[in-house]
Length: 513
Image (cartoon, rainbow, N blue to C red; front, side, top):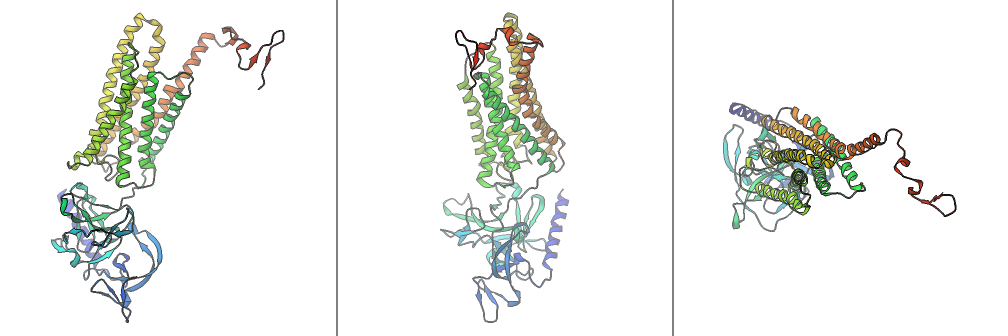
């Protein structure tokens, strides 16, 4: 592993040296500067900064800009001059003027600073021969300005080990995670306040990089389809329970709480991947923690269902207010604790990683297994215990109260199927997470299997609690009355029909309206 990293680093340095020997009449766009406000001399040359003279043959008119990832955007016609000459005059790209401006509201625009940041100008760079040396970045490099993209964010290696970086002598940035090499086009430097600075107001120079737009893979597309199918049927189940004529009992209220939180959690998590918008910063963390909260709430309400099933078989007291505190309060406390852990000074592998590389848990450590799947598995184990106790109590009760057989067996059958479904789904999701951590660069077969089970979750819940009860009622009525069922056999007459009126001494008539 060590030799492989050395080899990759040497290859990057070779590429850096090769790029520095290119001979072109005009330099690349990233090596040019805007001369709109520069001083022009009589011979057509321009003064850039304090001492850089740009000859007229190195000046051209542009009507566009090239920003992150080579994207070309139109702009009003303006002059640009070639100021960076690899090997002769190296440049360093700053987002805005380091002592006068800062990025405005996560855009590509700059705004004035109210105070001059005090930052250390000395920084270590890697030379073309591989050696490190410390230089004054404001004197050893010519400063060029520009923000490569919206929502640029600073790399902080002290808080995230994946963000270790080094500057190269030609102004490029080397990120050691996956050995990414960014040219001046794709990043910029900007002073950032330090936590250790305290009242001194100390700042450090940090690279501002762009969020990576991840292409939609086949597995992700498959997951999106599975989420849409499951969410649709869960919502249909909620509607069926709400529109039924009978008033919801305690067990059905608990079931509704479970289904609503499950639907919201799935919608929030699916929106992270279905939407093309790249969330970052606060909103990315907010969406991630909301998804965590509602997902955990669904499992706590599932636990409430099986606990109430165990208690209500003997004692039918209404504890819904207590259940509300348990089903929503504990997940809220766990979410708050997770937010505190994420924003603490703990090591990276102990943090959930929500809002960093992605809006969900870090896919390269065990945080999801510890903070999410372990909680779900513990709750499911409690549910299994409650369900087994319920079955044992049911056998005893049926010996003394055989009239309750239909109701008890119906509840046991419905919630037994639901328990099996949730256990199978959680097992596949947990195995998929373990597989992705152990083999991050390998196609995860368990991921597809868990997506198939996830797609079945909504339809199965709809079948258990919406379709199957109606079919059983019709089947029971058919068995009791036979194929020649006639409402008159049950004493139902025309007088019971809606809109029917009888008038004394006159034949029966119907209201037409």
